[in-house]
Length: 126
Image (cartoon, rainbow, N blue to C red):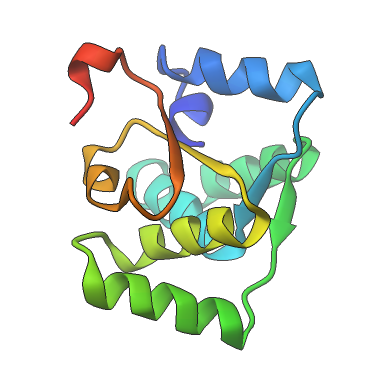
């Protein structure tokens, strides 16, 4: 999401997914919060509010965080070297049987848990 919102080259792949309309797209509310705090920290509250408005306009189903999701994310975090917020993205992908799209090499540690589509070239894959 950050690659898309920040206009990075990897964001073009994400844009293609949005435009295709051929796949369901999900995002955990925890990860929305992560995008917002990163944006606010770097660009201020007004930009974070704009980003939230943009996310709400995208064809994304925002997944609520219930006890089951918290327990799943905690289990992932306890056993893999990923951030707590990233553990929610992994848990969300598992819950919907989806593929997690990322350019973050930290996710290399969880390839056994979830299908990952790497946004960078395969030669750069962790």
